[in-house]
Amino acid sequence: MTDETDISPPQLAPLGLDGLLVRFADRLSEAGNRATLAFRATAEDALDDLLEASSSAGAVHLRFDPTRTTHAELQRAVEALLATRDWQDAPLPARRRLWRVPAAYGGLLAPQLGRAAALAGVSETEAIAYLGSVRLRVMAIGFAPGQPYLGHLAERWDLPRQTDLDTRVPPGALGLAVRQMVLFPTSSQTGWYHVAQTAFRCFRPDGTPAFPLRPGDEMTFHPVPPEEIEAQRHDPAGDGGATCEDLP
Image: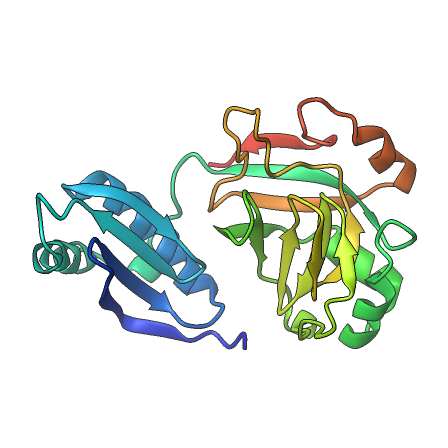
């Protein structure tokens, strides 16, 4: 499920009455995600009559005003823009940030770390050392409000999602599967392995913005004691002890 399979040239397809899908990859891929993020940012500035651009891990959805242009006209403009460069080599969007988020691994707050580590063939100590230091890109936001898909992890963490969906995680939970991590904005049933717990809120309905994370941001989740997470749950800003800095 996570072989790096990029689509070259990108595939274009109409989507509904007012949309065009530009697909760069059909599997998890660093290069495909880089192309997706770079093209989306450029398209927002370069394409006339564009109402909205949104992205998944490997594709960009462009929504246009059908009273001002057509699928065919937009597709010609997109093809011309795609031809201007190798998007898999393009720089990531500007205004990206690095978030450093405290996380409690394992124990009562995140009881499935041991199971995930065993499936990956490492000890819990080794799992924490790796997961607590790796920098992960916000590849896409979706499924739930503000929920980031973070990737990607080393190949040993290509773990299939659980099928029983018995796990219910609280807000701020870090789930792991298929070489990715997910930071849950709300309490949810899930097949992802609950390996760590944070007090970071990625959906802040009263905040400006409501979604603090943007595709292209990077995140690390450094280990802290469980009591630190409990103390940070009442952080009114919702950062849960996290720090943030601009990336070059």
